[in-house]
Image (cartoon, rainbow, N blue to C red):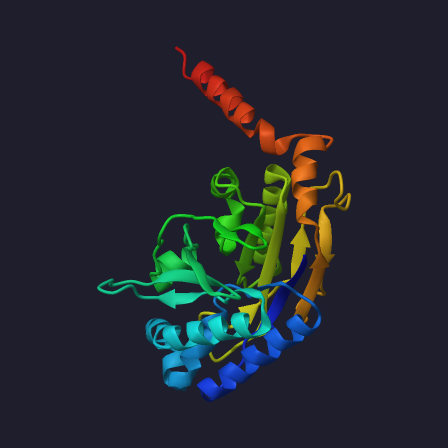
Length: 296
């Protein structure tokens, strides 16, 4: 399987036609390289806020509503591209106001050659999202069974929490997608380290797709730092450092990686270590330690 993960720059676009042309160009390029799974970053859909004008894009609250207003059109576009090119696409996430909801969730949607496959909402909000933007957690984690295997998504900060990753693993995830949007090297590194740890713990493949570059027209996504990368467990059939592929810091474009889905089952069954299988044992030991600590 060939994976394409985007280091995605955010542009000030004049209208939806320009937005559509940009998405078409990105998908076309990856498909021509033979990619079967394309991953776009967290909050990539904030570009849509600018279509309502500079005042909307420059206001934190207005930008949420402005980006949400194009959700149906953007979803239809990505569904048509997935079908037309015969690929699977994790679309860039963005704010979505459910019917009757006062606050938005941060949602990424997965599309395949036969159409929409499922949504994933972010689970744990960063300080900015909860203290300044008031974005809220959405629906629980759910693995999506696809023709490429079982795919789960941990949006940015979610990748930093082991129990969220383990929930996807227990649902059968073989590939975990980690779209991100971070404004510093430290922020990017936290998600990177989290994604690599989830690959180690679950003996699976994780994919990080970041936003990169400046977008001074938006106070929400004005600075973006990252490297598009694909990770695996540093064990049988995978690179010894766990890095299957990585791009260049803050350089827009696709990073491609070839993976063998059978290698995931193989490392879980024959690897030097059995992190995937021994997770319940680690829980049992931690529980025992906790009980002993609580004794008078």
